[in-house]
Every structure is written in C-alpha cells, then in structure tokens.
Amino acid sequence: MKILGIETSCDETAAAVVENGTVVHSNVIASQVDLHHKTGGVVPEVAAREHVLKITPVIEEALQQAGMTLDDIDAIAVTQGPGLLSSLVIGVTAASALSMATNKPLIPVNHIAGHIYANWLGEKADDPIEFPAMVLTVSGGHNELVYMKSHVSFKLIGETLDDAAGEAFDKVARILGLGYPGGPIISRVAMNGNKKRFDFPQAHMGKASYDFSFSGLKTAVLNVVKEEHAREGVLSEEFIADCAASFEEAACRVLSNKLLRAAEEYKVKEVHLAGGVSANRRLRAMVQEKIEQSYYYNALGKKVKLHLKPKLRFAENIAFCTDNAAMIASTAFFHYKKAPHHYVKPFPILADPNMRIYG
Image (tube, rainbow, N blue to C red; front, side, top):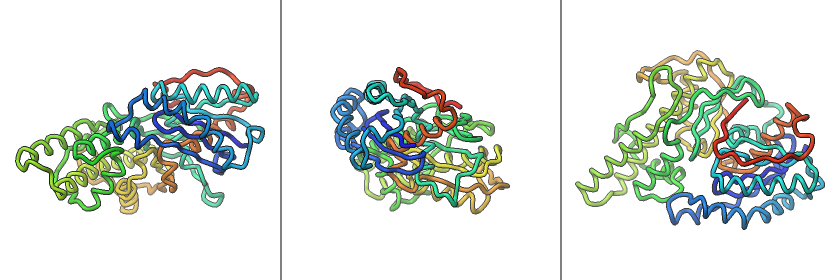
C-alpha cells in the first residue's frame, strides 16, 4: 500500500511516499530554519505563509522523486495535530482537497504518533520490532513517555509539565548566544565541554512520577550565565562549552532515567527514542550505556539494578528524527491496517492543535 504523507505541524513543509509503512520512496522537506533563525524561534504567521508557498511544489517533488503520480497512490495521510493551528490548517486543507479530487482515503495522523513510527521506517525483515515497547518522544514542543502494547495502542504515562526538552535546548542555546535551532548546536559545543563543571538541577518529580519539567533547569543555566556576565563581562568559549555540556548531561540523565524506570516497571522488550532530540548523541549513548550496565538512577539519585535488558531503537536516519512526512505516512499505514473500514472514502477533518495521543 502506497501512502502520500503530508506534514505541516510547525515550520517544516514536508511530503513523502511510503509503501507498507516501512519502505520510503521519497521524503521531501522544505525547511524554514534560516527564516526563523532571524527571530530565534518560530513565528506562527510567518511559518503558515511559507507553508502556503511551498506545499504544492513539495508534494509534486515527493511524487516525482518516488517516480509516481497520484494514480499510483492508494491513500493520503496528513498531520491533524498537535501543532501550530495556522500551520496545520495548510496541510489539512491540501490533503483534504487531494483526497476529494482523487477519491482516495484520507487518514488523519497524530504528530506524536508519527514520531513514534519513524522508528519503523527502514525496518528489516530479519530484525522486526517487538512489543511491548516503551517510547520516549522528545522534541521542541512535545515530551512524552508512551507505552505501546501493540500497533496503534498508545498509553501515555508521562509528559512535560512545562518546557519540553527540545524547547529547553533552544532556550539555553539562546541564553548562551549560540543561535537557533538549539539542539544540534548544544550537542556540538558540549563535545568540548566539562559536563561536571556545573551541578544543574534534575527534576525527577517524585519516585512515582513519569512527568518531566525542564523550566527549573533552564532557569539555573540563566542564573549561572548572569553571574558570569556580572563577574567577567563576557562569556568565554570554555564557559559556554562547559555550560552546554553540564546542561546536556542534566537533561539527558532525567530523560534516560525515567525511560528505563518505565521500561522496568512495564516489563517491555524494547525502548525507543523518537523526536528531534532523539538525534542527540549523548542521550543515545547514555541510554545504551545504562542498558548494557543494567542500571538506572531512581528519583532519589540511587543506583537501581535493571532486571530486564530491553533493546534500544531509534531512527538511524537523522531526517526521520525531526519533523517529516515519511513518519506520517508510516503511521497512517498501521492505522489503516488495523481498521480499514474507517477509511473507505474521503471525509472532512479539522486541524486540532491540542490533539492528544490516543490508542
């Protein structure tokens, strides 16, 4: 089954053609990073205008790269939410129009579920993903722990109570004068820093909580930077590198500890990293190290033995970690496979900026 996926939840205009949820025939992304770099973050109205300009050329290019026309497509998938309303509307409108014009099924997709299914892209027949799985989704706007008992079965067990991890990376990068987007820059600068120089706070939210909070960590970085400015007048390269490394270490430790604690409690076979921050080298390494050494730290900072050694998965292609349409088309396939009678003919849908993950 070949599905044309469309993604416009934030500032990436994307379209892709994916077959049977795993085979990527094309994955086109028109990035707005340079545009939003000027303002240090995404301006919704600016993003929406860019989507209007790029949506048709991006869809055409995705079909061209796949060597297909709309006649070869079996269904159309689109991100319905969550995201920026003005951006979502563009994608939903385009997908709805294509569905109506071609009389092909329209499959609405939750953006967070899309990030989860990015790990199925390129799945090998001799190494299939096994359930149950615990998924940590970490991106600029979202931060969740999701338990998957089977396909399209999502149980939300934890989420951010304020800033998502990706948003914290962006804001800390801005505080340090490193630019936007913050995730890749922090990761690169941190490689030359001393991660033990600053003992930044880690919000574990209590022994039983799987929720996240990064606002305190972000504020701690801001206070350290203000003190350094007052003392030295400028931030040295060494200070910036040490600050970035210490921040990255604190954020990744909370993320990895909660992921592995949840994996232990729910007795899963696999743990997955998804979303833009899943591309972070330190986060991937930290989770892998703890699995191999069979431990994690609990909310009290004590070392706890990991009785299970789940397999770690993440999208090997970095383009599948950030917002893209291939993950949307993949998710749509598994939705369709589970309940094809829900998508017999085109039907109207509305963009939902506050859409929750479900299952």
